[in-house]
Length: 174
Image (cartoon, rainbow, N blue to C red; front, top):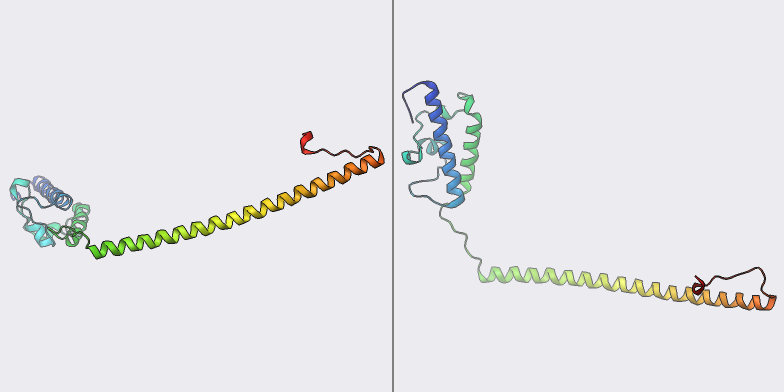
C-alpha cells in the first residue's frame, strides 16, 4: 500500500486495495481458485494479503481496519467481516461428492412412498366425491319422480273438476 503522499491519496489507495480484496474473495468463492490467491479466513490474513498484479497490497497497521478508529470505512469493514464469515464456511477445493447408491435408493424410496400416499389421498377424495355425486343423483331422481307424481295427480284433479283455476307449468312448457 502507498506509504507516501497526501492523506487523501493514501485513503484512496486503502479503499482501492480493500475493494480489490473483496472483489477477489467474491470471485474466488463464486468461480473457484484463481492462480496465486489464497482465501483469507482471519482479519490478519486479510490484512497481509499481497498480490500486486491484482492491486492488493498489505495493510501494515491493524488499526486501519478498526471501525472505531477509522469510521469512514465502517461499511467496508462490515463487508470484510461478512466476507470473512463466508470464507470460513467455504471449503476450498471441495467438490460436492455424488450421492452413493444407497442414498439415491433411500431418496427414491422416500419419494415413492410420498407419491403413493398422495395417490391414496387423491383416490380417497375421488371416491368420497363420487359417493356424494351418486347420492345427489339419487335425490334428484327421487325429486323428479315426486314432481311427476304430483303433476299427474294435479292433472287428474283438473280433469275431474273441469280445469279449474290451477295451471301447472312443466319443464316441457318452458
